[in-house]
Image (cartoon, rainbow, N blue to C red; front, side, top):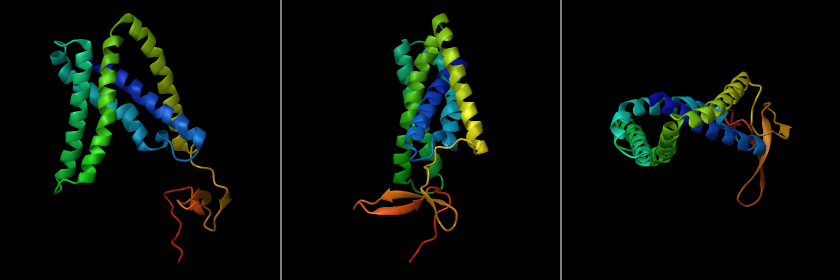
Length: 197
């Protein structure tokens, strides 16, 4: 069950990352998940960790109905993610409430991935489920690997397209303030412009 849970959770992670990349590509307002390590975390690393959790819990979960198994697995995975995230952050000192809110925000997708992924893994054990999931997983993984390689090579990007060059060579993008004034900002967040008096 562990490898099926890994593949099913990875299928969900790949679907989410590629859907958000397509959204970022159409809007061209922000960098997509495929260009930052968070995409790899949700598509590969998190499903592998959920597969290890399924390896430890699958024997105990078999006594329940499939839907209850999925709910329990999703709840346990989200709870563990929340506890690990807040526990490692509070080891350095007093717990930070911003960290707790971020852990809750990060734990929800992990919980949903665990719940739906475990239910897909149960269906994946049937012949029909395997015939449907393997081709979809193969296509999504190929697209993810191709776009990731192109993004890391600098060929593929969803960065906003600038309308003019500034003095330091960084493209400028127009943004509007809350009052409706046009403010020129760099499209590259890693190289902010110098502060002008």
